[in-house]
Image (cartoon, rainbow, N blue to C red; front, side, top):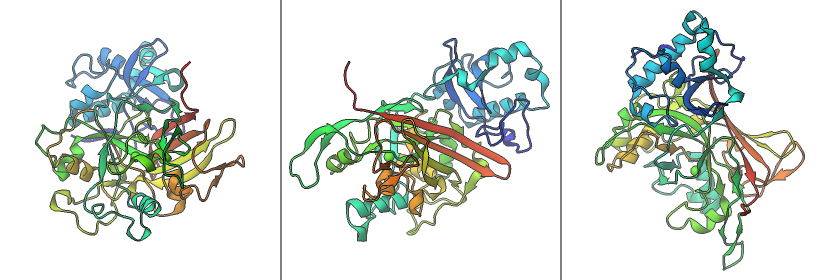
Length: 427
Ligand code: CA
C-alpha cells in the first residue's frame, strides 16, 4: 500500500499558514464537537477541522471498506481496530480530496460548508477511549538524573535499566485532552527531617515532558508481538504531559513505584499524528550497550526526530520556554517497549496508550521536568516576568509543543496546554 498522502510536493486548495504543524502531508486524526453539538471524527489541515463523518455520508470514501458509521462515533477505537491498510487508504483519499488539482470537493460549495470548520469553532475531545495506560521510563538521561538525586550518584541507573524498558501500569481515568485545567492534588508527604507524614496539598507539582503512542488490537492473551512487527500495531503519537507530585512520589513510591503522585492527571494533545506521517523522520536511536536480549534486538531506524519544547505561562504574563528536547534521545524504541510489554502474553487493545516516560536530553536545557531543570529545587528558573520557579505554581499554564522538520516539510503535533488550578474544594 503506497503512502501517497506523504507526497512532499503536494499542495492543497485550502489556505495553510507557513510553518503550520498541519500541512496536507500530516492528516492526523481526532474527535471534535461542532458548534451545533455534533460529535464527529475528523482531521485537521492548516487551521481547518475536517468532518470525516460528513465526508463519509457524502460518499467521499466510496471504494474504501468502512462500516457505515465509522466516522460518526465519539472515539477512534473502531477505526484504529481496522488496521494499517484502512488508515493508509483513508489518509491517501483525504490527501487526494484536498489536493490543489482536485476540484471534486473544492468546487462543491454546499459540501464544503458541511465538511469544513474553522479550528476555533470546534472543541477537541479525547480522541480514543483509553482502555489501558502504561508509562515507561525510557530516557537514559532522565533515569540517570533521577537516580543521582534520589539514590546514589555513583550507581544512578538500577541494574535492570539497560536490559529492559522499565514501565508501570497507570490509570486511564484521569487522562484529559489539552485545555482541561488540573487541580493541585492533596496527599501524604514526609517533610524533610521529619519522621511522621503530614497531609495537605502537594508543594512540588511538576510536569513530565513525554510523548505517547496509541496501539491497535495487537495480540490475543498469551501471544507476544515480535519486535520487528511492533510498528504495525502502532497507530500514531501524541504529546503527553504526565503531571507529577514530587513530594507525594518521594514518600509513597517504595517499594511498588508510582501511585497517587501520578494518577491525578495526565494531559494529551488532541490530534493523533500517524506513524505513517512520521515515516520521513526516522533516525537511529542511541547505541545500546550492553546488547539487549534477542527478543529486544532490532535492525534499522526506529527512533523519530521530533523536536520538543516546554514553556510556562504565568497568569497574566507572557510564556517562557524552559526546555528544548527531542524524542530521538529515547534509549528504548516504541517497538522495543511494545515487544517487551507483550513478551509475557499481556494483551494490548485498540486505544491503549503507552507513555514514553520523561524525555530528557544530554544537556541541562533539554531536561524534561522541573525536578531536573531546577535539580530538585536547588537552582530555581527565572521566568521572563522576573518570578522564580522551583516547581509549578497555581495559575501557571504548562505548554508542550512538538514538530518534525525536513527540508520544507513540517509535521507537528500542535500543543498540549493545561493550567494548574489551586486544590479542589467542594462548592
Ligand atoms: Ca511519567
